[in-house]
Image 1 (tube, rainbow, N blue to C red):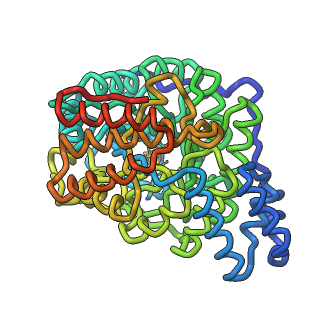
Image 2 (cartoon, rainbow, N blue to C red):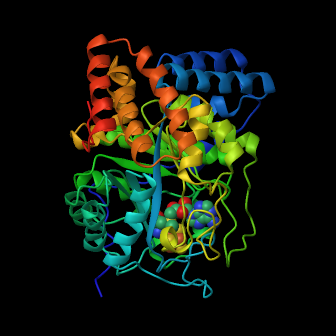
Length: 474
Ligand code: SAM
Ligand code: SF4
């Protein structure tokens, strides 16, 4: 069996979360509306907010002021990011785990869970099933276990990239796995990964200790907080952070996320590529005592405040949330969603599109097939995108480019979204989805401002419709 990564820290690692300071920033009377409006204006001027400013947004006290925050987040999404939503699917590779996170169905003390790790052949079968549904972007998910060392993760990534069926291919593989050491991150980077995600779960030290027993690897707060610093030192500049909402006060976790983003920005000159904000779900073998569930109304505030605070960062909304809520909160600034997701190991071939299997890590809220989600997105005026062009052309930080380079979205992102959407419509869509998509494409092509790009795009779309040429990007 392979050895676990050494528990070494990055050079100059430090714990940058000061609980008392963050708690203090949230205490006191509701924020002054004048100050809140100034901060909203700063965010709409596309400037990142300080932790203190984020705290003021979180302290907005009246429904009217909270609605102003929502409206600002919607406006930033509309005017800055436009109407594209990137789609991906999770692929669970193995659920062996040495940790005992109180909230997770994969924890080692859960004797009911069926432990399983996909073989390379099984990974290929899952990937073929995902490609046959139209997916182009995956996130591979792993428990923490000696068998899942950096080489195993890198090999799994290579297996995914090498699997192609019909017109299908996976063009970007992201990772959600345990923190590695610097050398481990170097090894997975070589396999051509996209984003490496590590969620800190809760930034609150006492809650972290209660959720992650001492003596387990994940029980070491600083080792986990420092994970993505090590990733940067191992050459990975595309990282994702996240918190599991529902373990502690949601406002504190938002400040933790913003502190983490600013820390990476200051230390490495690049903030996180994405932020995830999963809400706690029920899981087999899990009973928690001191949960702090986040209501739907507060969940909307989490997303809106993050949208305003960390403008260069993509926001990921997962299928843990039910379909109707996803539809509503997407407008507040989410840039990526998963669709057609299954999280039981092997489920893409063993459960099919219509069923949810029983022994998952946690339950999902939205299990609709990709085709249905695509159609609903288009009916709501979004362009579903499978674009991976930035990553393939070495343009890392796609959200940073979208945000900071004038004209980037109209000249690159939208045309690439339309060409990957056309691939989906031609190769995988149901007749209804294809009809909805063709209508949307006509409207969106008409709106493109640059005639040269418009003409070139029309040529590329025609090529996709009439030949086997694929993967034509700007
Ligand atoms: N084992 C790795 C780790 O812990 O970082 C990665 C995989 S873990 C399966 C991915 C994420 O699932 C965790 O970081 C946690 O935020 C989330 N998760 C765990 N239990 C959950 C639950 N009951 N409801 C919602 N999300 C959960
Ligand atoms: Fe293991 Fe990750 Fe689940 Fe914790 S959250 S028990 S580390 S799989």
